[in-house]
Image (cartoon, rainbow, N blue to C red):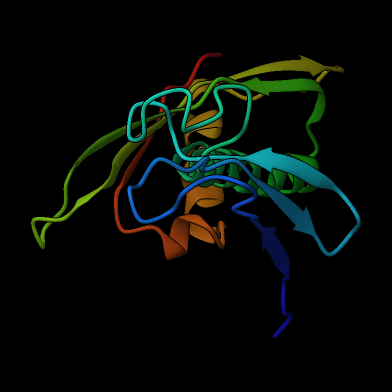
Length: 154
């Protein structure tokens, strides 16, 4: 199986540490050469100790679920003979207590907006089947213990 690498880099700098008043801002670098700003969520660690314009772990998990679903969906749609012109998703995750009583991302809603082109477009039933199969085949969804709901639009 393939290995995937992400490097997380954080430096304390001149800040104290023992008092908990240190920045949670860090750099997330991926094996393909892309880097993004990371931080704790401001809902978890209040500003200015978190960085509002950075991706937090919860957002990254939700983005990973959305991206994996989309990539799997695109391939399934192509194999079924459909042509997609664009796919946009505004995914949303909710925090809650999981079955173990721990705080977790427990519920994610995917809201894909798909623009189909060509003579063949899916029926509501075909669209549902494509989303269902995409969810079943998505590596990230298979790694996630929470609930994922797809709000389908034809």
